[in-house]
Image (cartoon, rainbow, N blue to C red):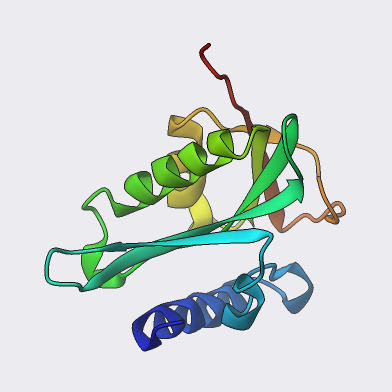
Length: 151
């Protein structure tokens, strides 16, 4: 993993720890993202500057499968430029390529996470109950998006 990516993810973890109680921080360490079940993507400017990143974790494999969004982060200097939307769209394309019928996510319930919840809602995600290994958590909002393929 490149140093700039590691730094952005560490910044993400630091903010999650500062914003949410320890038991409600579900962000993954950079080392945990380098496994076969996770597809990690970055967005870069023409000059190679890191703009943002995101990951798709496999919860259920293959056709009829289920994926989870993780590590969605936009660099501070790149906010407001559509980076999160571009990363999200790429991850949803990857989910379709993997045969997933649903993509879900966990984000914070605190006001700090309002922009993230709004982004996901604008792309069709709706609130749902806990999924995967998550349990009920008043500091978490769970969202899901059914994926439709056109044949």
